[in-house]
Length: 120
Image 1 (cartoon, helix red, strand yellow):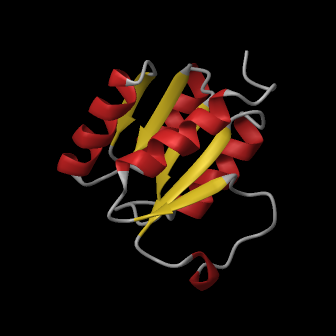
Image 2 (image 1 turned 90 degrees about the horizontal axis):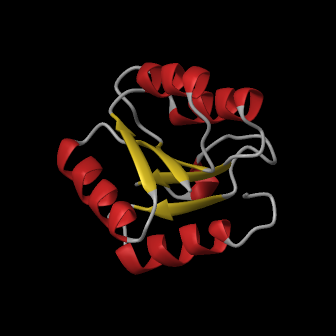
């Protein structure tokens, strides 16, 4: 399973990528929304782990682009905000985790996505 990891904080990016790789996922880590959009044009992803606050684009805008480019991908938003604080349309994300990320919750969430029938 391929995971696009979009997180601008380098240590967090490294930590998440290391855990996801250890759990058997193929991880493509990027640090900006524009880099993520470029990867979506060239590669297919089963899961997109997406930070809300990126230096160049809002994470929700990236999520909209993910939905257009790869609607079958599961989008997991990672944020320090509470979900109710964010203005988003229905169906934009499939799940979210608050920062600091609990790695056990991350494991359970991506494991849940991995068992969904849409993932081949």
